[in-house]
Length: 367
Image (cartoon, rainbow, N blue to C red):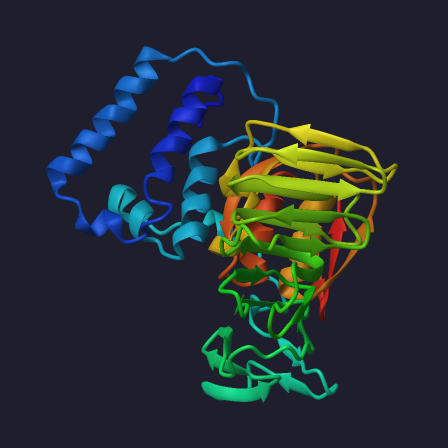
């Protein structure tokens, strides 16, 4: 709080708070002796002063580290428990500013367009069999729809499209068993059954795939400017129109990415970046948690500019963004739950010196 912390001390404090990020109620399950051990580890680590290279990225705040760390854990856990347990006082910094209006987070929303052109609003549909097409049954279970063959050796091909609006997300199991998670403002066109030599789907936006293995039928994902071919693997594709590049990130297996007259092969932990000029860049040593954070219910940034941050917020909260004044040059890092109202996210970001105003479904960003 005296602003004398070294980069090593700051990182240690962040790691200490991250212990509770995935288990927000864990603090209540710890014995006093266990809490004391954690506190001693923190103190010992600061005294030892581990030497690390200075990181100039802005971690969602400037200045008071302890205060910002407490706010971050508040948003992650949606509770005051951790801060109150140690300090016996309410956490107030994140609530100093109030917004006149607020916007709730997105949820499980999708529209399914059948082969005959009819549309089903999936978030309004009841669980169970919602349609049958070309020998395939379509079954809804909460936020998931699955395609299951009910007629053997059917050769009829029909295509469906699942469209996720801004403020939505949904899960899908294709007829071959491939699992797909779709992010907000995305769509996937796919056959109700895979009858040919290939399994091909068409994607806009962002999706995470866990492809069912079938060495005799390659699985292809086509976007507007590239195609990804796999046999069975886990990968994420970010192909939004308003993003500068198309990013294909491999978590498991192997993937070949094609674009125009060139192609690249990527290995687990790597990402192919298709640039606007048609060239590929391969990135290595990625933070995979950041890549699939949206699928796991969080925003996570690592050296992202404010426009990148706000594009994700815009898609998830179904809002427009307007910028006034000079945009900050800072890069941001941090992790925030996607299950809180937008005001809580904005309060965290405001610690970096940016100001936000909510007007209806528009957020105005002022430097």
